[in-house]
Image (cartoon, rainbow, N blue to C red; front, side):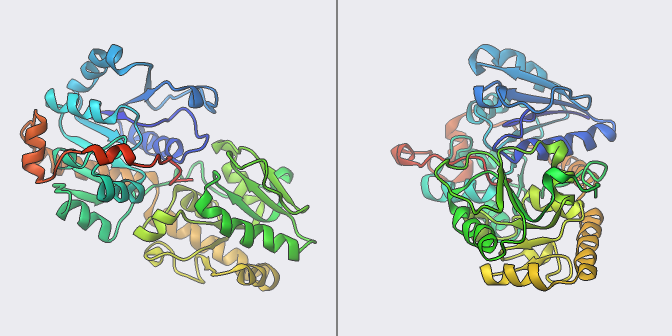
Amino acid sequence: MKIVIFGLTITSSWGNGHATTYRSLVRALAARGHTVHFVEKDVEWYRSNRDTAEFPWCTVHLYRSWQRSRRRLLQLARDADSVIVGSYFPDAIVATQALLEHDCRPLLFYDIDTPITIARLRAYGRTDYLEATYVPAYDAYLSFSGGPITNEIERRFKSPRAIPFYCSVDPEIHRPRKTRERFRCDLSYLGTYASDRQQKLSAWLDGTARSMTDMKFIVAGPQYPTTLEWSKNVRHINHVAPAQHPAFYSSSRFTLNLTRKEMITAGYSPSVRLFEAAACGAVIISDRWHGIEEFFTPAREILLVDNEREVVDVLASLSEEERLRIGRDARDRILSEHTSLHRVLQFERIIEDCSAGKSHPIRSENEFRQISGLQAASSTAEKMPVATANTGT
């Protein structure tokens, strides 16, 4: 198949979980013999922070202006066997309208930020990259989250197919590695700064560090305020490139997983970092959220905690034998259910289903409103708060 993806970024993993998610998926698509084109808007932040220059498994199309590049990009999509528009793609709304006008089908929406997206559709009827009136026009809605939220996407927002499409890992990349001294520590955390996670991070990692001064701790990720003060035995690394993630996780006795507020509310929303860590055999200490048991068995494949004291207890009392067993079992679970090959096989089935029930073209805004039973975004959208694509990090 020829597959065209309009996504936030594949060239830079700085401050987002999209790039590694797309890279894993696209590699596996290419390995299955598919031809993939990735369309990315050439914005300054990612242009200045690109962490890979070669993409042997897809063709990357960078553009600066949708208006100037519209004809070229639509031509690219016209003969595609499937077209995907991803969350936070900067020109997603105008691109969707144009793709529908030219009957580029099957057309799928890939939401790597489902809890954030749906929260804003409920409140405002739109986001910067998706309007509620467009949801029925997509042949399928591939959702980062599973559970009840996919039922809501179908019932409330009239998607013909809302399908849990979890993130995945490439087992050739995400596997146990030798310990690297730069990353050696007792407890690590890898993630972009997020205000709704910082209270837990300060308590569970930095607070633990203050009471366990003989241990070493690492926080890795960009955008942390310079005003934050860490304990003396906590080291901050501004960025760990994706190629170094396996060594990072393999060099930590334990790694911490903290979940964004919207993801906790939605439930059934595992992040790509969670799966990557598990695939590397890391022993994960995580906060609780509804549905986590669908992905890992508590106490056997993951350690769930509720406060700083429980983190301290794990670091102080868990035997080395038990620690290593938990890491092995977590890796086995991911390799059996959530590799990029699992996801590509699922994607192929979705495309088959969509092609069998191919929709008729919908060409006008009025038609979108009629089919969806929803009102177009009104002036309330002007009050919509700005959200950042940090869900997967």
